[in-house]
Image 1 (cartoon, rainbow, N blue to C red):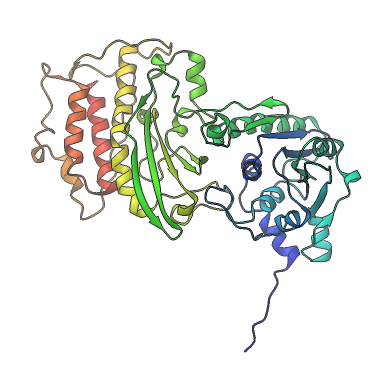
Image 2 (tube, rainbow, N blue to C red):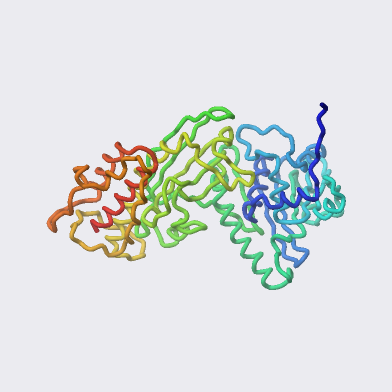
Amino acid sequence: MSSVEVIPSARRLVKSLRDVGYEFVTAVADLIDNCIEAKAKTVWVDVVWDGEDSYVSIADNGEGMALATLKEAMRFGSERDYEGEDLGKFGLGLKTASLSQCERFTVASRSNPSRADINAYCWDVEHVEATNRWEILPVRTAELHEGVRQHLKDTTGTVVVWEQLDRILGYKKPDGESARKQIHAMCRELEDHLAMVFHRFLAGEVRGKRLAIYVNENKVMPWDPFARKEDNTQCLEVKTFKHEGSGGKGDVIVEPFVLPHQSRFSSQEAFNRASGPEKWNKQQGFYVYRADRMIQSGGWSGLRALDEHRKLARIAISFPPKLDDEFKINVAKMRVSLPAALRDVIAKAIGPAVTLAEDEYRQRERKSGGSPAPGPAPTPSPVDVSATASTPAAAPAPEPSPAGTPSAALTRSEDSPTASAPASSSSQVTMPELRRVGACLRSFVQGPAEEQVLEQLLSRAAASME
């Protein structure tokens, strides 16, 4: 039997594609990925407030696109060969990111450095719904915003313009004060997000791809999640794991960091900046990078729970695009999962960082007496077990272990010489001793479930010492 081509309904599918899952900041970031691939040195993001006629433009000074390349780029699922370190993947980002925020977007581009020939096309949801056809509309140069025309007269590159911002101006009165304030708040949030996601590019840490980003003429400064310029930040041993996926072999690099307690930051301002867009507790955990572009910022990917005592632990995990399938990266580049084959080794690799972070938190809280003022902290001394804890919150009780695992034995004092009966009031125990006990017990742990139980027990033990 002969095959039959079934073309999706344009008017129905285009509506569904608007709900892939982008937020405003992630949609802009996805378009900046394209700018980096086009070898742009600078990206200008302008959010122009004009009531119902407000628009957003993302302009770069990259290589630009010839007419045929532009038409193909406007295709949903565009066909192109991605290089090894390209930030793109599905051929959907430009379209789905843009339509997630607006009903009409235009792409204008110039590729010839000798002549200011500008090619422009747009996707218009209203037109697609009226015709039920996958048609892009040509846009004359004279119809472009003056700023777009001027930019492409001065340089090669590409400009994407979002108009009819129904998802951004979701107000009954889009020209009202509430809508204007929302736009300004979104711009501030966007600066913070781009400073974090592209911090390696902004800081010149990616070879040959240094980037500058401006949001409404404000230069975005890189935000380093690991506060590496702080003298008291601890950089632990880097681990590299070879992993083979459907796209080939690649290195997964794990870099643990322990940030200083508030009292050991160089200044209160530096401490506040290090807290990050989501603040300290939510920013703890894994920072996952694909080709040096951050995909995940914080959280423990199911290996641990968020905990006040671990908020100083931040772990960089980097992987190449050839391992995309194993990390299950999604279209919006907002979600990633650790490969099952690496979860145990990563859990073991981050153990020392988590322990040191908890120690840093408790030691400094105790010595500072809960004072928020930054400055040098006194040298740790032995802790009297009979002393009463003053500042740290009690650690959460351990979760039940899965049936059939031996981790429950860790709670019985007779099974371990280190888990002895409560000490007398004259006993002296130090945190380094507790860490050595933890290191010894970890050699007997099997799997993340037991690791989590052990870490919770060590947290409780440390809390009781105080």
